[in-house]
Image (cartoon, rainbow, N blue to C red):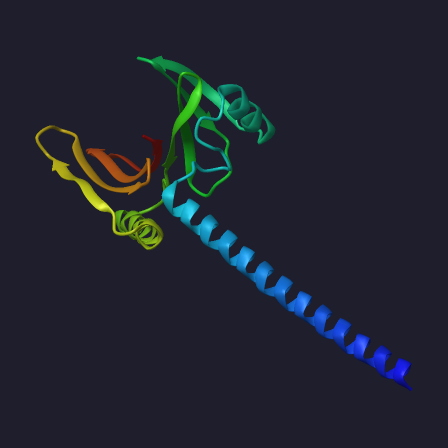
Length: 196
């Protein structure tokens, strides 16, 4: 009878010990997951990554390989001062006309997305600017107005409105530009990602 009582006591001890181990593992794993999520969130707030899955300082060869894989076309390669600027067309995103990739010392330092919507009215452009600005404000804090001008001194009427967000060592800018000469009209929305 005593041996049976010892077996039951051992079983209770083992079950309690196993339960305690599972509880400790659960608490630790929850803590690790919480730490990971808070670190990931802090990382995303401290650094603004370029679009299309690129990273700052990606090499020219890597960017070219990814663009080739996406069937996008590099339509021009220019050398401006100490930078290389590629104009790329064919990246699939609604309204995206072209993308400029800028490299310094053969490493990615800026990406500019240029959107054009030929059939849109000024009201629709204003609405789209408001939507993009609201999205960035909610994600990165209230943007700073860096430009609001309308030039009517020449035959070409030009309008420029721009906002800026600083995120760690990166900058994001949103611009609306229009130029009108009589019946001819050009409008664009640009989103610039820059490593500082």
